[in-house]
Length: 112
Image (cartoon, rainbow, N blue to C red; front, side, top):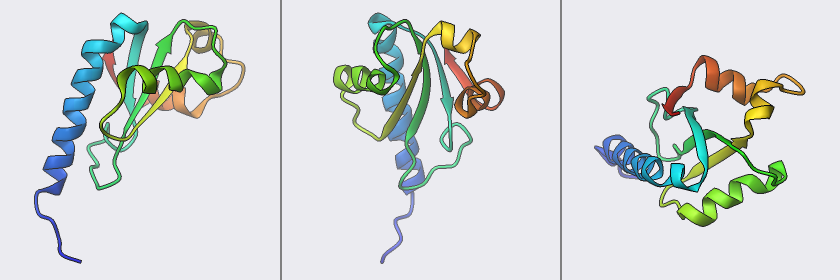
């Protein structure tokens, strides 16, 4: 298989462009805070790199439906994982949460 030179820079640009678009649109849709976590936040870019976003949003939706709201409204152009928490879930977690630990200790707060 031929090697594609410059792919990392191209993928980085795609992810950065999509993140900027999200930051422009998401506050109007109810996002209060966003952390960027995962490989992209660590500067590790590869063909399968996606945006891993931990969000704070006040919602009554069950946990398993929350990401659907963002996918439906934003229609991402690159791979993205939305992990949505309420303020109460962050302030009073019921159990240790790996994603929240990652967001607060290693993630990049990009909004809020």
